[in-house]
Image 1 (cartoon, rainbow, N blue to C red):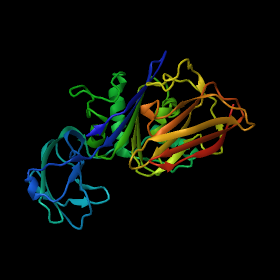
Image 2: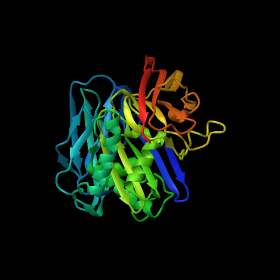
Image 3: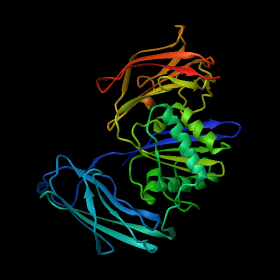
Image 4: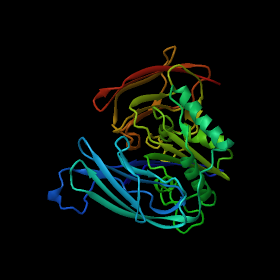
Amino acid sequence: MTLNLRYCLVMPPCRLLLRFLLLLLLPVPLFPPAPAHARTRTYRYAPPQPAGIVPFARPTVYWHIWPEGSVRRTRVSLSINGKRVDAGYSAARRAVAYEIADPLAPGAYTVDCRLVFDDDTPIERTWQFTVAEGAVADLPAADAAQRAAGDQVNAYRRRAGLEPLILDARLCASASGHAGYLRDRPDAGHLQREGDAGFVGARPGDRNAAFGYYGDSFEGVDHGTRTLTGAVRGLFEAPYHRRAFLQPGTTDFGVGRSGRATALEFGRSAVEATVVYPADGQRNVPLSWDGIETPSPLWLHAGARAPVGFVITLFQYGPEDSAVRVSEATLHTDGGEPVPFYLNTSDVDPAVEDGVFLIPKKPLMPHTTYRVSLTATSGGRDISRTWRFTTGR
């Protein structure tokens, strides 16, 4: 199953479209063919992969499945078109996985999997996929533009004290495929339609999986911005979109560009942390934000008009998303002058459940130090922060 959360930006006159999607694998009960009375555990799973038409001739065969409680022993039997292969179960990834070394010929394939946790009743699953005509055997390395975009994303992260993201060939291939699809279909957003030229997969997770990436992920897309640098910057400065960029720890990242269409793919980190931006002590912070994002965080506030001040964000990350509750928020210049702002919290904005936006009502002053204070909790834990940053010009 997937949970979809979409945002988009529309900027006249170039009709900029920015969209953002969170793909999160949700655990669901597994009901295999064995009688319920014969099973001693409850299992959770995601659909096995690959599935559908695959453009990569060396996909990873992958089934995300795990039982509740601890496991002492796991036995796996996996065959592809009746031929037994050396698959294993990764407790860390909670999945059966098999890396295909030699490229598969175009055509249909059937996977049969039999899995036993400890001495429980075997779990069996069969699924099919098709290797496309012309499927590539090796994914291309990132080109100069993709590397530059990765450097740009990591520069934002470095200012926040975060580790760099890792440019991933699978996510770059997925992003490039979707950017090519979007080039002639600016309103397609995150979805593709089977039968269209350039079709890879209906949803972002389907496209990532087609190239062998099965983790949870975020996708952001842009259509209309003249440069890749501008597209990445626009996605980062829009507060709803910023969440994917600032995940703690390190994870994977991919980017694709075709014409004026851009797609970004972010793996999802499970590291738990509270991240603020601008960061404590950060300098040369932009003065303003143009307010172009859909749904707009400004629509919640009567009379709000852009441009506004550069948006200040706090996000709470972790394996389990938890709402951030704010009891007090202040913004002052370092000289003590209060700065009026709009406040977006989960109480008024359900789209920002695990974060907080402080949106100054007017552009910030140049070469000025500001002090932010938030008294907040998440999941019953105190995540209050007080920090300073300084604007540029």
